[in-house]
Image (cartoon, rainbow, N blue to C red; front, side):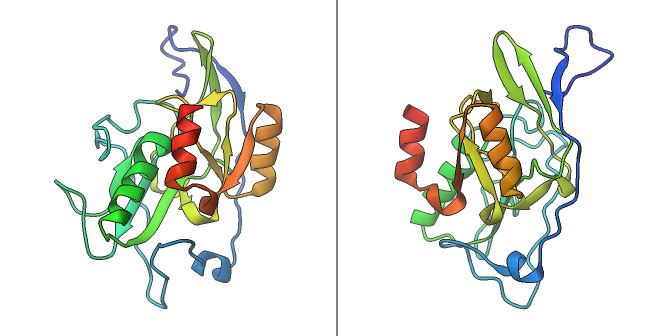
Length: 202
């Protein structure tokens, strides 16, 4: 979790990343993968801020209080229970992707999926009790199109619930992170229910 200078019990950050802006072409932004609804000329919803005590639609945890990437899904003709779109999550491995697969089987069509983009934030790595974790971010501008991300998996860096998929819009960033932290990389289409089940059991 991000280091609070006023809290001496909070672990000190081990590493930071200089932020930069990644420019994506309109064509790239228009491409969606898998069963996510094809974008037409009309705009899709923008990501929202997930702060403010929102609770994860998969597990009920408060978003922003735990390490790791967050995510949100806007559905075309459906909405999550208890509130309107998007569905929101404080973890990808145990929140967003399981929810996405479950509701895909129910016939729900995702209009757009957003996840934390670690290529565009100043993230921190902190160590506590021998566990290395990556910071969490909830502001709307910290999210990017999930289908355009490269995800670092099997690394020593954990999310809020343990093993995580850490997204980067810049593949070079993902590969550098994986090399430094003993991980591998996968693309959005590589993440299937079967793959995720195996990953979380490994």
